[in-house]
Length: 323
Image 1: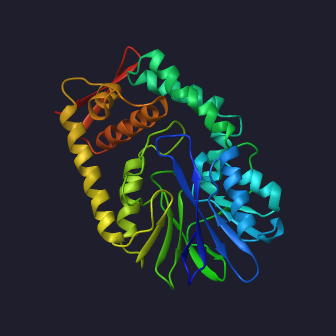
Image 2: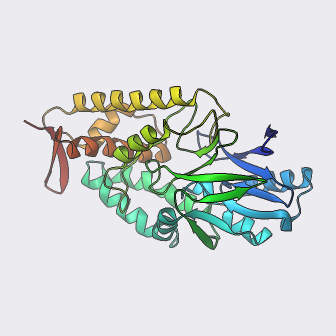
Image 3: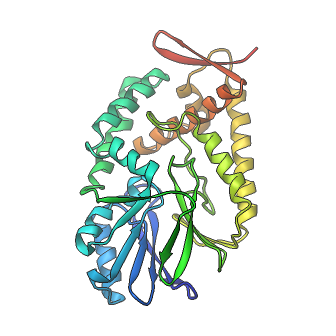
């Protein structure tokens, strides 16, 4: 679907096998060919959508000249290897997130499964729930095979998408090396999962990642207030205006979530206890993994700022308010 006539941007809605049932990829048409931003998972339903779009728009494989990834989560880069094999186009990702792909997904996620399992157990999650919560990581890994040959980008780079120049904006938080693509001429931001119109991006603490991802994200939000953006094209949901208003809503949301979680720390409390109090028990295994990691990110944020203290006892971290 053509969503921006001036920049010739098409939105492609790709299916996901989760409650959040879609991810938006964007195809940008230029005089010399096409450029893609994000790819969805490498699943048969996603491949069918890509094949149908290319047929409808009369796109030959050789017409795809570049594939740009916002961040190293499987629903955003999973089909990049398949598309690269089809088109021979280069695939670009931030240097930080290329390292994340190598660390997490190149061995089919087994090392990461082990690390996440250990982290969850050390934060109070019972072993049976930990096992269930990490099993779906193997399914995600299957959706990234084959991995592409990546070229890397840094923040502040200038890249051509279609017939126009975009600036890469490094926005760590949701992912350590998350990149948005800004067209300053039209005031348009391809924001990936950095800014979403209706839901909030998951901000999680993961083994091997940033030690304070929520601080990273809040700073990225504040930095984004200064960008000349009038229209945002997100990875989930529809394009939206009032971008600065949405940023302020997200900043408020996280402050409210911090206040809520701090209030739930009574005596000595584990991440798992707070997670259940905030998110409840009706989550899928996939969802409880992200809820647990997001709770950890918020509690660790408060530890770094001296509001909470974390102490390990009997192989489990327990949080209490600082005296």
